[in-house]
Image (tube, rainbow, N blue to C red; front, side, top):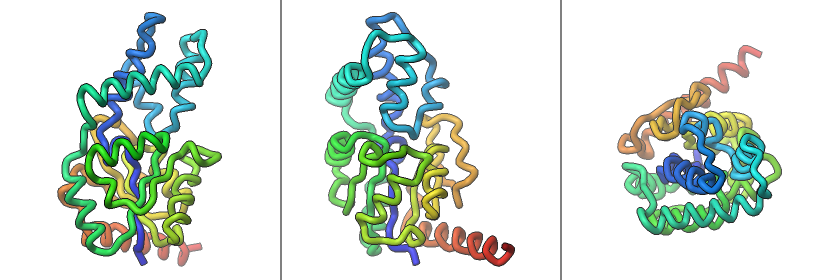
Length: 231
């Protein structure tokens, strides 16, 4: 029985990936380094440490991860203060409908916890969530299931009673590894992500409501039961 819905944040609730990419370019300016958005897309869905370490190694930067992270935080804060948090169309109405239908809601994001709080508050959607979980608080990042399992535990819900909403390949695999149903959100700013393992895809949250997520969950259950019967 579907009881809880767990949302990724970046690329799902906040269209933040283009902002993050701009911040990385700004952070690399002192060394005259740059990299294309196509390459950045490979990092989408992972925790900050993976991206920071990857860029430090790629460009042989004379800086520690901690120092690079502080620069990145400053750049991101500057961009968000200047331009605001870019919301994703249809999200507030979708969350209101799902909450009104009685589902418990959580955010399970690779972003730092303070970023999750700031973004959800800035967009006025923080009141819909019962739990906020950062990937930095678990041992293994997506595609490991850790962050989703921690969110389910905090909600008091069994994994089999959860549905995850994700926009990245790493995230979809994380949901599947957690034993949860998954709705894939096709966000063009998240790049050509392989969401084929999701139980259903959507290009717009305007069509997502309680009836929609229940249908996705039932579809997942049918596939799960069919596989069990064949084994």
